[in-house]
Length: 478
Image (cartoon, rainbow, N blue to C red; front, top):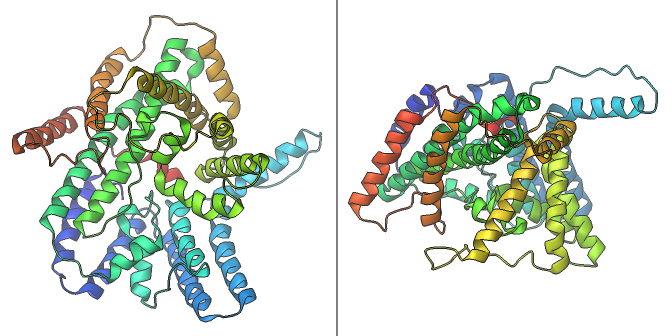
């Protein structure tokens, strides 16, 4: 079920009203959340519910086993089973054909023809997200960082919580699971804040991302037919498309969770105002970046040890992050390129330089900060070309054609481009004003007149310029 669909427009208020009829009945609320989450996910394909149930059941049982066992070898074995089951399912559904095709291609380069078969595998929506969510539970229990739960309903509801089930944020059990054991009562302030965040997410998705998609999809599918100017325009618009699409989903998910009394972690923090690549990655898809930091980067040694160990760890985490996104060499190239862009900061020891919001306590950035933000944005756009292209070869040709210098004044889709410029400008202006807030429509400090004018303004933009084709979210494919 898509957030930007008629079905969800009916599903959400109905679920909201029925849920709060169960106020003061926490166990029934949890059971209700579990049921509606399965309905929400099963809307795509009922068959894939079995995977969520299997993953939940395995990790629920392993969590109890890890806590009860005193034997280190047995605990390691139990954790290995959790990793094998979860990563095995993820690997089969997401990467089986990729590995088979890559294996065949490698032998063909040596002149050896193999007759290997691929399978017609449908990728279950959200499998990369809920797999990492359940793994955080067993790993944290193994590390003695949390206690397991015996409440099977609460745990299954945690794994399948519908607002963030299919595209995050990737919640840690230590943050979300305890909320299923807390009494939840209607909070007008939290519900109001949730509705504001949903409105902001819808604006970014329906108005920004889906309008950008019209141009981006046309240009990237036939980039050889366009001049350098149009290729640059499409690359820049893709940067805003994927941001509006993914951060829009996160805002809708976080806002929806607030309607039910839950607080999810922030997943985006105005990443395009970053002053270097390291800051960008602290602000982009925070739930995934922090997951890899805590469960991969730090166990590998993190930033400790000699330079080459640090270098190895950086490349591992970026390449693995790229591979997490999909079974295509373009994502690995994208991750590797980001590692290369991160390298100068690592060498100079400045990768932790920008940890606070840009132009803190100032209305405007200084010239140096403007240059830093523009430079980071350009480097990010170049990397996004690899992410968006169908193949690494297409990525290289796309960039080579830009460099060729055929910068004609001809701009295709001129009307659409001219419309997007002020719309993106509105988004960036609002984000700049609220760059230090948990979400960019957190405007309670302004007068009621200004706040309500802003809400009406965004609703009008959605009404007049939104795309209503129920376009799927980009990260559903991951």
